Amino acid sequence: ELILREVVALLQGRGESLPAPVPFRDFVVRSRQGVGDAAHEAFFGAMLGDVDEPTAPFGLVDVQGDGSQVEQARIALPAALSARLRTLAMRHGVGAASLFHLAWARVLALCSGRDDVVFGTVLFGRMQGGAGIDRAMGMFINTLPVRIALVGRGAAEGLQETHAALSELLRHEHASLTLARRCSGLAPNTPVFSALLNYRHSRGESFGDSEIAEGMHYVGGRDLTNYPFSLYVDDLGSDFVLTAEIHVSVSA
Image (cartoon, rainbow, N blue to C red; front, side, top):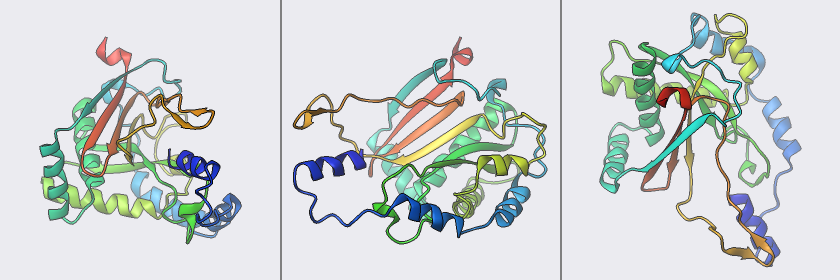
């Protein structure tokens, strides 16, 4: 949506003051000059080396779907609860994303019968891209595993550990999922995870059906993923909107 708005501004003659975008090739060069494969392997080896079974909520392990067999449910959190979450995160010195990752880990623990869970998290892909990366146009997101242990930990300790795990993962946001999987103890052809959390900063308003520029209309869109157990958290700046996408076999 941000890119689309910039395009509209340019079409309407309001983009003269926008900084020149960074070429995507520059981003590729910077990412290759960052953390090397050896460091990635050491990091994911420490995280996943002793993981020999996937975290499979309700036994779901098929990650080859096309999104057509999932059901979607969406809810906007009450404003009071959203405010409490932000206050709690601030009190503990973490981002709201850490709270949702810990909560999702607890959901997966209940749905998989495990107290040490691994799931995928969607990374922005621009945090390690260097100066000007905010002006680069292109797809940068990457999905990588995060591991959260729950047993023997109170909520505060679990929150701090989750925050630390996500902070460290950001240093490896350009690693490939294939590399991460290779560092695990999983059998061949076994997915590293089948559950996904996508925490994203979004805007509350949408284009709707209105014309956004002469001859240009916003048609709409929908999230589709091959993962059978997913949660999208839209951070609207003050409130939160949660969207769950779960394989139909769970609710059948």
